[in-house]
Image (cartoon, rainbow, N blue to C red; front, side, top):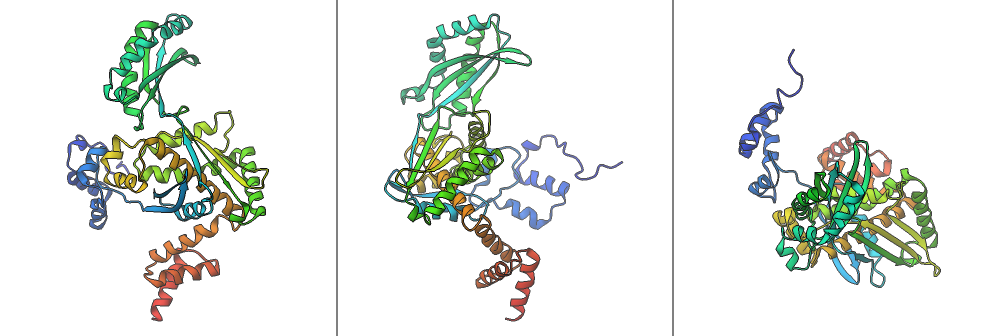
Length: 427
């Protein structure tokens, strides 16, 4: 019986082929049209050679909108914030929130040192508790071996700074976990930390008599926390009633994990959009942020809103952020370099502070929309425009069709098509 769907996914040596050769094979298997193939061949602002060097088995590129959020004042400094995202209203909401939160120094933010954790997991140690003491006795030797892998980082003031040791009970037995604490300075740090963890593993094996099974960075960057906070007059955001309702929404997120997840998703809308624009490891950022939100054993919001004794609305956000401005895709992707130039930042610490501030502003925008006109108003307006364009509207007709759909409460592709045909047929 012939397999339904693709003919076969077993393609020997696929990675050795050129982009065009790979695309030819995929075209045949997936029955792609010439038009679809040409769309994949359009690499836009990314050189195909660079794309092919970044990841494996490349057959094309996919473009996302690159936007700039305006009005941001962070720590007294003005920023244009590049954002890459496909979701309507996020950039507009961030810009509008930033306008409301410009009072004084604007949004304040402060990042910790840029410390990452490298984990060495030791299985089957001869005497776990004795081994812990032995590891700590050899601490300086272990740090020296780690730093020997990156003299440049050490000369710049970074490198392995400390170690932590603990024992965990797993369903496969006792494991010793060694944490190598590394100051990665302006890098995200994964490659640096992984290299160090692998370098010190044999030494730790000799000390413990166990086997170093895993040697890898942890994306739970608890020593790389960023805090952002803001204080704003209720008059600047629609009045005391709006401020009170925002605090109510914050309290609901604190009490209900189902709401907390969506609350935090709104924060990550802003943070991940900046991460994508600057070519950060957004998967690591997401994983670390959500782990931090659940550190109490219950999933909680990453931000909190209150009203202070003067009647001002205050917001506070705390989140681990592992970002870099050197190495990896940050330097490889030309648009990421442009994004960093637009931001005009000088360090990974500053980038983290900007990202946390954007996350707090995005959170404020979402909560304010929820407690006033509702979250769908802005979304549906942009959605209506998108549908109008998809239905063939151009120029002024896009707005006419979108406004008609919103007015009638009938926002769909079919109705957009009907309206486009109606208006174009009447000239």
